Image (cartoon, rainbow, N blue to C red; front, side, top):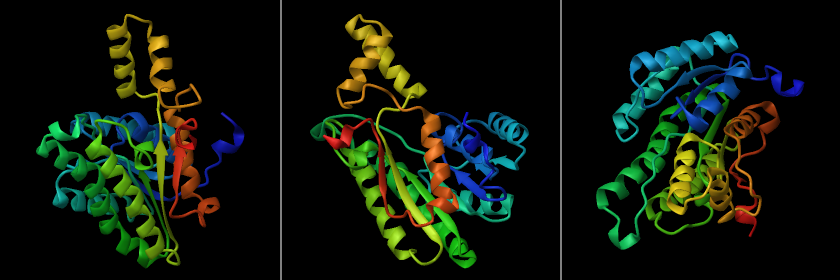
Length: 268
């Protein structure tokens, strides 16, 4: 890794990253910890596994790290998660809304309960967490809010009515929060990834390889080139590094943006 990326530019900052026990969320947590931020990680694992992960991050990066659970479909639980993170860390400087779910079906066949679930977790949970975190950030005159949206916050794909609606809504929410806090020392940005090399995507690659009787390398290429001009997946660590940049002083005037990391998907 380049020497410049090893600089501890977030030493003493306090961060909550939702959905951070695996995939993109874990990569974000690692990048922030590497930069010196103290952390609360959160996810759908049992307490023992979550606490082991927190201890591992604390030991690896020499930071304070805690695991907290929280049902992202429950408003009270989300508010409690933010409050507990503030207690555990002695305050909160950084909020990364990463937790999300997906369900696919044509619009006429989309189950109402799944529609509501996708909106609850991908959009409403972000709003509730931001609303809970803002007063303390405003009082201290500093805050960094990063919403992990999706390329589907900018463009659409078939069979993803709820996901596309939620992620478009999240981009809109990001802009409102940025405008309302433009002179409060608080920034709010959205990151919009395309194909990211995670375990979830690996399952899609494997399924396509099996269905079409091709190698996984060919299946991955076919999956990516269906949407992206650049036939290459983004590494989760690249999303983590972008989040870290947005949380530094270098990102203090970058606010209200929706940043695509999508291999040219939305350039078409």
